[in-house]
Image (tube, rainbow, N blue to C red):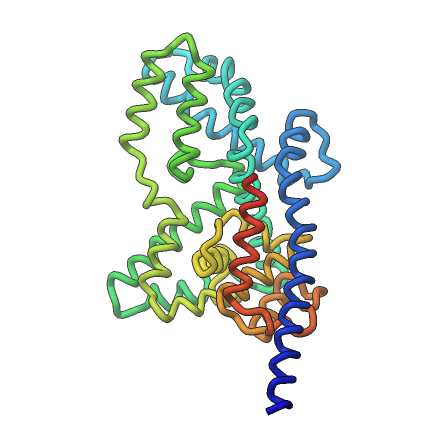
Length: 323
């Protein structure tokens, strides 16, 4: 009995120790994330790329420019402009700058650029296809027509995503609902000389928008349809980076954007917590780290941290980032 009590005491002490370690590392990651987007906004405005790669900066600029062109093209059509390119050229930079002022837009575009960059890196380093993953190949060949159809739609959406990222594009219909609303509001705020026309354009765009049809929505529905088999999406070599990020986001009830950023540099503690919150054992977490951060070792007694405590730590960190 005494031996058993001692074992339980050691287990509790180990869990507290690992929790304290991860909380400290998570706090350091929080500082990086909380300052990243204001710094990124400054760099985009001032052409200073010292802290972020040229590729990420270029992709974000390109995405904001592409959003602006889509909005302005709709307005030019409503106004019946003969010189559409001239109209776009006159207003595009101003509208793009308005979008870049929004931290939410920056955060979303940053996460997308990191997702594509990491997917391409995994493809080169580990041969993990960013589009046609083993999980999607299996489901596309399923005898269940609904499941096969869902997998094919995800494959098509993921292929478009990678193509759009290479072109530095962001389709309006791929925005989350709150950012879609913010984009049409930005159009109204910048093109103040056309209040009636911008209102008509915004209404028309909203009528054609269906958030459920976004790429992330397609992946989410596929994982829900997989039921218990969705656990296989928690293996990055089987699911691919994009579905893996969606799966750990769903399993931990955390933001997908933060889940994506947890896969990058300086966020290994956050990634470990995401994976533990998703229910992965220490050995399974270590296996995922081999693909993403082979140089990082988990702290001793990591398995002593429960999934519930990992979820709670992530929730506390998310609350801090939101503030």
